Image (cartoon, rainbow, N blue to C red; front, side, top):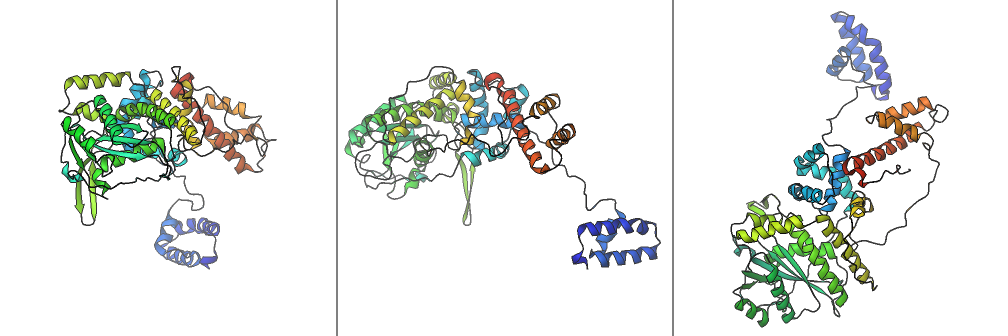
Length: 508
């Protein structure tokens, strides 16, 4: 019988016998409890609890969660800072906020409320990842990584475990092929050098993979490094293992080594940068020709400053094996420039020059230049012949405005984007709140803490002819969506002031 009894019937039976159970004698309580348990199928102890209690099993008390520490304004500001950092993870973004926020405020890109600024700076990495979770789900699909190792045997071998604790200037070098999966013909390569202690990364395009050109490019990079080049570790490709590079390293007192064949983990530092720097910003498409090499050189000129001054990276602190598992611990993420400033091996004069350069850099302008050159490279890869874009010196307010909503479009790097679908600009049904929305906005301006349900009840009370209860749940959900959009717009206005123009909410 208990299996066929609904929850509503059990609740009605409870209300009918609860008072008699409380007022009855011991014998009457035993008899009532036995009958109640037999009819409802409850356990005897549970029956005693609910007969003596005051809870309503049909309409339980509303549960309240923990209050939110960070509102929509904090999330909107965090999305913009995440976009301005080129979408780094929460553990890397947390230490970067102390550098990125002052830099953007110094160039008048942000005007944060003091309370909101303090919230962003004290926000933990886990909280950052949680708040950015819905945004990342739309904006960042999973991306494959690949690298093509080449094998040659020459010069001394150095494994990943032989580096110990090197001084700044101990670098790994590799070449990334922009062949688009087809190694035939001529295409552009990227020469990548990564400093092992600091993570400082330099990239340069190569029109052809010729030993003399590789040596000339290494020399040009060496003259721009903020530290002396002490050691150079390469793979086994013929572009590196040749007499030209060996003689060059001997002339400049540079220790030249190579990794073991077919074991690219010996060059783990530069292989990681091949993916996180080159492939992430240039992609996997085929790039060929002198015009593409010039565009790539301009992209790397901006990317060099953005990566080394505004992109924190992880550094392994310790590694412990526990059976088949390996537990790794990492230092707090820091930018390569910050690691150099903290190093005792760097002279004070070079540190002062690094600080001067950091004071003049605008991360938003660098990111705008990177996006422009990525767009130019994507057009070249599609077979077009555009003119090299002119560097923009005007105000970046439009680009800053786009950062707040760029995540909605998904991938923003033109080198990774697919052909976009045409935007939908029509409605499939009449807007039910077209006439009452001005009234709703006025209510919210007076009391912005009103919930969607409270607004819906007030709309029904003041417009009974338009909202009589038919399709009530659907209309209330539409009103809740409109309320969320209004609050997002208000949060943007709070964070950026007049940077974002006031726009009506998006129609469902």
